[in-house]
Every structure is written in C-alpha cells, then in structure tokens.
Image: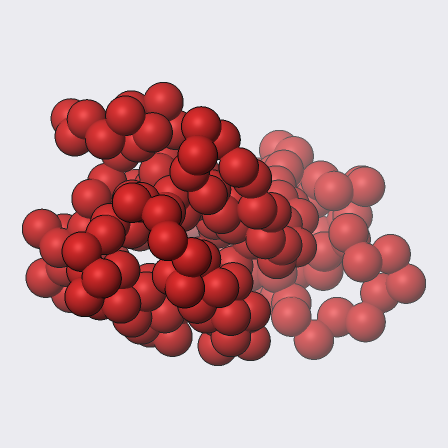
Length: 173
C-alpha cells in the first residue's frame, strides 16, 4: 500500500509508486496520487521509506518589458515564447525594428521555453534588423535556447551576449 503524507509517500513491499497520476482530481492541486504496480518477488527496495515528490516550479507568466538604456532599446522577455505568445513578441519586435537605433537588445534571461514559432519570430526580427544594417543582440540566453540555436544551425547567426553591459557596448565574448 501507499499512504500519502503531505507531499511524501510511504511505501511497503507490496506496492511500487510508478508515476504521478495525471487524472487525479484532488481538491488540493499540490497533492499527488501514484499509480501502483507489483513489486515482484524481491519486494520494493524502498520498503518502509518515505519518498519525496518534488513539485515542478510554477510557470513564469509571459510578459514583455521595454527599457531604454544608454540610447538602446531593451526588450526583456518573461516566460514561455510559444505559439500563443510569439505574436505578442513579434508585435513588440516589429515596433523596435521600425525605430532608428543601431542595435536592439532582446533579454532572454527569464525565458522558460521557446518553440519553433518563437524561434521564427526571433529569426524574422534579426533578418529585418540586418536588412536595415542594424543588429538584434540576444542577452543572457538560457542554455536550452543555446541548444535550440545549435540544433537548428542558427548559433552563428545571432549576436549572443552574456549580460546587458557587454551587449550595450557590443563586445562579443
């Protein structure tokens, strides 16, 4: 049997917690119910021990914040850039592309996820900036996004900076 204790589970040799049950309709959304399976002849190795399930960090809501720093526009992105949010990012970047600035900084430090539509939005903004002889500088890009750029063959296309200060002066690492 598995006995729930807050966010912990107590296991004995007759059951095996396999995974959280996604169909559970508990009143407390933080509680987890586990599907059970047979432990086999040798018993469950965690018999009698408490197993802690760590809840995923709450999703950061999507938001865009525009800053003006040293005659540069900085667009700070929060949350996931996906098919639902990329139109908002596209609109904000289009406004910045239309302005007459040497470079626009896109701060991605607080981005939790980027899908193909978000990547397409960034590529489009970069293409429009280049056609005007200007730069889109990506700032504090998360490792998952760097990996996405590498997998898609775009890692050499973007100007990626570790922080805002280096992006403001335009010094690549």
